[in-house]
Image (cartoon, rainbow, N blue to C red; front, top):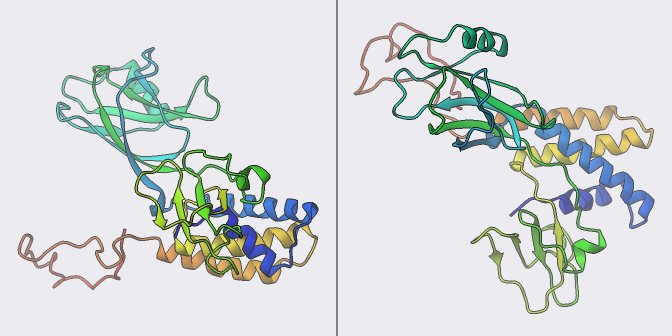
Amino acid sequence: MYYCAQDILEYLMNSVGGGAQDSEHRLLRAAAHHAYRDVVSARDWNWHVTTATLTNPSDNTPPGIGYTLPANVRNVDSIIPPLTSPSGVKYVTPAEWERLNVALPQLNAPYFWTVVKHPTLYDRWMLRVVGSPDTALTFTYTYRRKPAPLRYMGYEEVSRNGSLNTTGLVKRYGTATAFPEGPAGINPYTAEEIIGVAGSLVGTPPASAKTVVSDYLDVSDTMFTAVLSGAEVWVAKMMGKNVEGALTVYNRDLRQAFEADQVAPISGNRSGGIYVSTPRALGYYSSSGPDTGV
């Protein structure tokens, strides 16, 4: 199942009694937008970790060289140097990086890198490397992506007349007589896909099926639950109602999402066994730790 913005609006219409009136939809759309933004920005989610490469510098003017980062970069975790790098790379603060570029490192020193605001693209970041590396070098880097804000909720005319085919949106197929709803709806979708992504079609759409297109939600199962309860908080806030009850549920769901945001829950950071068999590695002289993952 692909979570999409349509699911948030359907949930709100079921939970807070919203209807098809334009004024109510405006409020529900705003609540969905704000709740999604709050949850995806609440922490550095492991769900959003991504790997990419830096190949063509966009700025060769001193100090160092600069690479324009994609628009969806929230923050950079680390960069991996090419095999020709003698001593790897090391992160420094922007102020340290400026000083290093004045006094260039000695031969075979590591590359030093930092992230600064892009000088001309006001919504972008620039990764700068100091030490005058060859501009042909390619760096691999890991970062956490920033999902785009919601725009299409599935109830706009363009979302239901078959004319919206933007890559990355979720397209759901209903039947020849009914528009598709979420899995909990009276007319659940018969198939769905992410537009422009090969192999993403799930199910078999009927002939002449009506379709609904809405924004993809870049969230895990537990994050989605927090988005729903967060939307209820925003509905209550914008309607001038008491938000304490909804906020309590939202905080609980958000904590559960924090706890579930792991990809190897029992791996921990421990080593040992046949490869490293020192007493401390095997835990003889240290207390056992919790099963924490990454």
